[in-house]
Image 1 (spheres, rainbow, N blue to C red):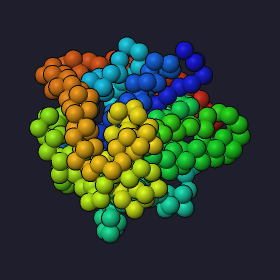
Image 2: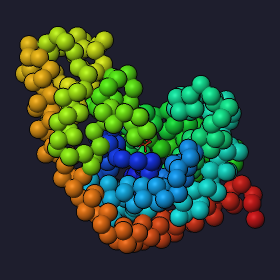
Image 3: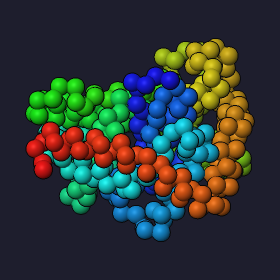
Image 4: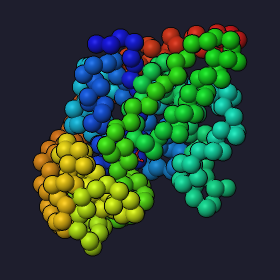
Length: 334
Ligand code: ADP
C-alpha cells in the first residue's frame, strides 16, 4: 500500500454506463483499489448542470453505484459515496469559483461542446463545472485522478486552481497538484456511429454505444451495425489515420483482448472488418454481460445500495471536514 497516493474520481449519474466509462474509467478504478487508498464518487451535483427528472436522477444515482460494485469496486477497501451527501464539495466549489479565472473557464472545450450553439441558454453550473471538479478532488487532497482523455483539460484546470490557491494564500504545497491517470491504449472510446465523437451517455442514438446493461443480442447487433471501412484491415497503424471508425473498433478490440494494436494488425491484416467485429462481439459478450447482469441484480436491493452510499459518505465527510477547517483558516474565514 502506497500511503502517499490518494486516488479520487467520479462518474455522473446521467444514464446508462457504457463501454467508454468502463474502459476509460471503471477498469482503472478497480486496478488502483488494489494498491492505493481510493475515493470514488457518484457526482450527482455535476449531473444537475443539465436538467434531470428527479425520479430518474434518484434511480441513476443508485444504478451508477451498482455499476461501481458490479465492475469490481469494494466498498470496504474504497470509499464509495454520492457527492451531494458531503456538503463540502459545494462549499469548496464556491471558494474555487473565487480563485479560478474567467479566462481559464472560457478555454474549456467540454463547455463549448455541451452548450452547443445556444450557449446563452446553458446553465451557469455547466460553465463553472470544472471548479466543482477541482473541489471534488482537492477537498480530499487527492494526488491521482483516473479519468478518460476527455477530462484532461479539466484536470489541468484543477492543477491551476491548486497552484493559485497555494500562491495567493502563501501556503506552498498545501494543495497537491493532482495528476491524471489516463489509460494508454483507449483513452477515448469513440461512438460506434461516428468515430470523431466520443462514446457518451447523452448521445441520442443507442447504436452509438455499448451499454453495460446490453444483452448479448444488443451487443451483437450494435457491433454488426457499427461503422467500419470498406477496404481490408491494414498491417500498420498509420494507414488507419483517416479512418476513425475502423481505428476505434480495432483499438477497442486491442484493449479488451489485451493484445497491443500492432500485433492485432499483424494478425488481422488482409481480412475484412467482419472478422474483427465477430471477435470483438464474443469478447464483449464475455466481459460486459456479467457486469450488466450484476448491475440488474444489485438494483433489486436498493436499500443495500443506499447503505453503501451512506457508509461511504460518513467516511468521506470526516476527511472533508478536517480539510475544510484548514482551508477556511488559510482564507481568513472565521
Ligand atoms: P459521460 O461522458 O458518458 O457522461 P462521465 O462524464 O460521467 O461520462 O465520465 C465518467 C468517466 O468516464 C470519466 O473518467 C470519463 O473520462 C470517462 N469517459 C466517459 N466517456 C468516455 C469515453 N468515450 N472514452 C473513455 N473514457 C470515457
